[in-house]
Amino acid sequence: MGKLIFSYFKVLVMIFSTSCKREDSFRIVLLQDTQSYSEPFPEIFYAQTEWIAENSDSIAFVRHQGDITNNNVPAEWEVAVNTVELLEGKVPRVLCMGNHDIGTNGKADVRNTELFNSRFSYEKHSRDADSGGAFEEGKVANVWYTFKAGGNQWLVVSLEFGPRNKVLEWSSGVIEEHPTR
Image 1 (cartoon, helix red, strand yellow):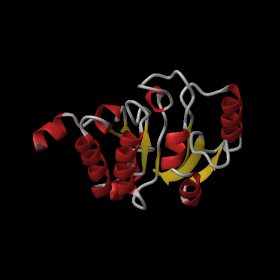
Image 2 (cartoon, one colour):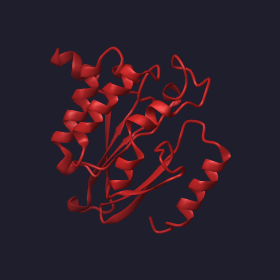
Image 3 (spheres, helix red, strand yellow):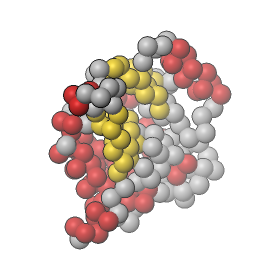
């Protein structure tokens, strides 16, 4: 089973450097398309987040890039919650919803963020030291974070799939308010 897990292990680790000095280097982990795991192979999703948790001392931020689930159903969201909880208090992170996370049967036929917002609560998000804010009170579909790495202050804005115009306007305001990040 171990070979299976790591043959499907799609974690991208980006190393950014602000200068040639080694001490300025840092890592950002990008998780992509975990919908491939949340349904048929949850053990792969667990292996990814276990690795991140075990290496959290060398990781500045974790960014999920969307499509957390395959069909936006409770069972797949429970897998996501249980895997992401492994990172709790260890590394700053943000989850971004993809088209598979908002509709029915893996389609973006409706804008239904209820399962996402109920599993990843605004209350917990707002307690994170790196949390900046959210577009809508009580929802984490559109949020922003800050973190420090490589001697710089960073801003991360995470938006819903196919963001509405008012969400784009809000995110533009967040970016304009942080011109040095």
